[in-house]
Length: 127
Image (tube, rainbow, N blue to C red):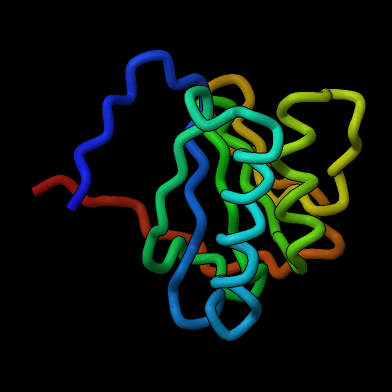
């Protein structure tokens, strides 16, 4: 397994490769994102990682970009490529694909009317 030197990395893109996402072009979207990073000569600035389930299966394929904390629903390889492009060119509008955005130190749901809300996590009880 490779041990990458991540010095100088500015963004980390997490691409869900869980079973639901893989059924909705997860492999193709992963390849498209990595290909677009290479095409834009951003290999030293953007690191990608395949993940297992990120818990938003209804939004498959889920792509998360940090440090911004933006969660996207990449419904095609073109959306995957556009996610990479939008983080280079902020004028590209990806609002429709956005699921969550990290604002004021917490996750904020975006496009709530067109998204499945999901199950609320139970509050932890002190032992």
